[in-house]
Image (cartoon, rainbow over all chains, first blue to last red; front, top):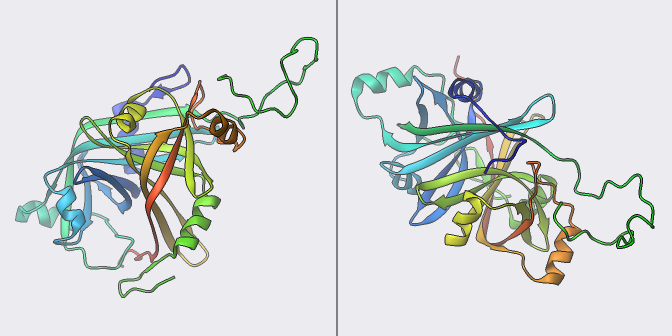
Length: 161
Length: 140
């Protein structure tokens, strides 16, 4: 989806935004049905690492599967940005790799036991910036009835802009 | 609000709807041709459903292929350091009936993205869940 007001972010911009945040939303496919929830994550060498409980429904939906994480925010100029990382998630089992990720500043929001580390190896990282339009109301300060005979004040506008 | 041993508590359905009404900005998850996808959307609660505007694109294609979607809003209350999240699972469909179109144009759903957004989508919930949770401070 691209409009003239949408700016694609570079890979460097995407990863800089990812490195600057700690909470993302993880979308997964559970038996064909989408689910989404917030996670705490950290960027490690242009991959996404987060913690997960063992043997949960989530673990089954995530490990070895295609997932997507998304972060977004508001710029000072009122524009919105969004970065999405798509890739396959796998559990970090290698002992050396595991010791390395345990040093990462990763603090889950929820105090339940989350012994497993999961890494999303990105296949596609995309980002865009776009402007929020004002309220969806007619802007007709110069309205005169003769110019716009079809206009009825207060009537809903059905026609697309 | 139910309680739980691990620092989380479930929100009642009423509490979930109250938070959805207060926070229009959320993320939509759909299953696309190459896996799950997330889109930030500006939505609004209308008679127990979620309504938002969109335009032709991958998001709409995915919902036409499979109307099952998930919509999530979350936030953080700095006063008590509690984070919360509400997730709506539901069926998405395009608003096509003329009188329903009239109704939703009056809702004031503001899309995030400029440009023409002629299609209204209504998510009819099949399940709604919410929880609040204590954040764990970084260990020192």
